[in-house]
Length: 214
Image 1 (cartoon, rainbow, N blue to C red):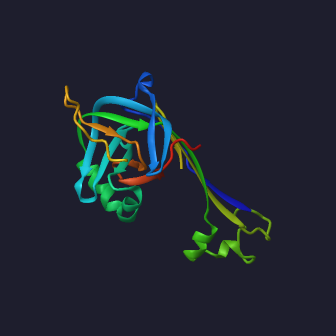
Image 2: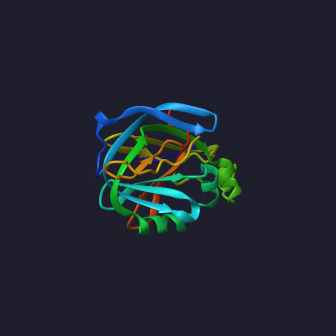
Image 3: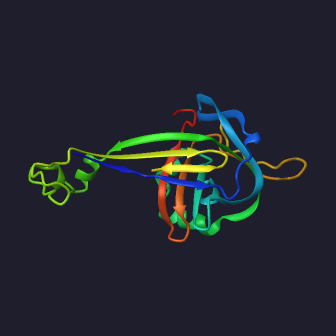
């Protein structure tokens, strides 16, 4: 028997991106790989924060009063960020984001992932359900029922209207020479969190390494 966990979430941006402004642009996967992606653009008042401690820029896009997507763009590479980021950083970012005018570029994303969790659960000591002696009588009258696989599936789709989640590359921060509006461009790997701001719980998390991959 397979146990399948599938996460689904759908939301519309509080500040949508204008589809007319979406243009093909470069995304730097690594020092040697550049791909062309559909890059969304919007100039508006966004919730942003620069975490100087770990050299990271944070953009929080709201869906509604309690749920938002947090895009986390490191200046020094994604691996370094993954090694240090923790729930304390999320709490700090939620507390620290401030609303100000920015020119924001975010790639359209459509990702699907699937993970086998049997080894992970076994490593956590959850082994009974995989053995012949497992008692699964509450979900089936078949006394021989045993779990053989546990699969977690998640998808993330981000476009101009919102997001559907079902579970030489410098940071481009600069000032426009005329109107002095900062630019935040997500053109290299970054992390994504969908979270409830009230409970500070993570509903979905992942990383965008190559948005051109489906």
